[in-house]
Amino acid sequence: MYLTETESIQLPTPPQMNNHGNYIISLGNFCRWLGQQAEELGVEIYPGFAAAEVLYHEDGSVKGVATGNVGTGKNGDQEGEPGIELWAKQTIFAEGCRGSLTKTLFERFNLRDGVDPQTYGIGIKELWEVQPGHHQPGKITHTVGWPMNQTTYGGSFLYHPEDNLVVVGFVVGLDYKNPYLSPYEEFQRFKTHPAIKGVFEGARRISYGARALSEGGIQSLPKLTFPGGALVGDTAGFLNVPKIKGTHTAMKSGMLAAEAVFELLSANAESRAGKPRAIRARSSKAGCTANCGRYGTSVRRSAGGCGKP
Image (cartoon, rainbow, N blue to C red):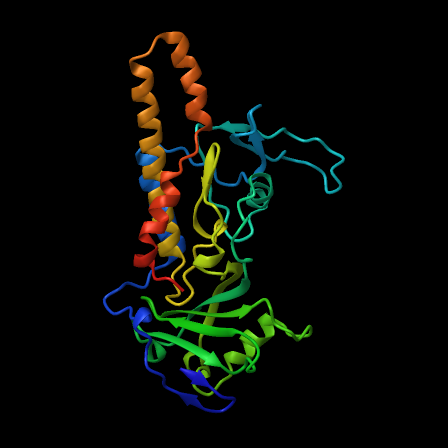
């Protein structure tokens, strides 16, 4: 839907944005459910501990990550409880947009050489409980136009899941020229439009949040693998803007990376099985530092299915 300040114009749905037959779900609930499935399979999850440092082998390959100290003072003058080191044969980085550790990997391994610069946006989202008469389960609305001007990239989304809930959000490209523009305030203005405000009459806001988005597309994807690890999800920049699909591509990249790592480690195990013990130990180090390049090849092959920008 295209918005002017007082009017709305219904636009045809672009073919790549056709979502008929799909589900509207809570990503938070979905991730919690996935976590439970993973733990039942023996995966260890450490919530609340952010990785603070990349660890390296002597040969320069990635060894793992270390968590930050717990209890460090505001000015860093208290050592606190030291963090822990997590070592892995392959370390998969999934930090989201502009990950702090991923940025160091870009520089160390020159992963962004030969690709377009990344572009960014900010997305603001709210969850509302609306009046039953204003709720239409399964309805999806996207808008462009007002309150953005013709030179500022931005747009909105409204999703109607179950239980009289509505998810509303607004995205603004971070290349806007007006230094006084506030994405949050533009989002609030958007909700006052005549075509939108009725949904929220008598409604109650339950929660809200915001996050940065990588919007450069496939031409901005860095090299995905390096000795000892790989990048997946939005830390690499897999958001497909024309389809407005980021979670889907993040999950697919994780699946492809997992398959490539499994194949790599299995091949290393098989190669060690028939060799003497002394050679086996040396091969083990090679397995830890090997580059799982099949992952990058798989991503390029599947790019057509994800929809090239």
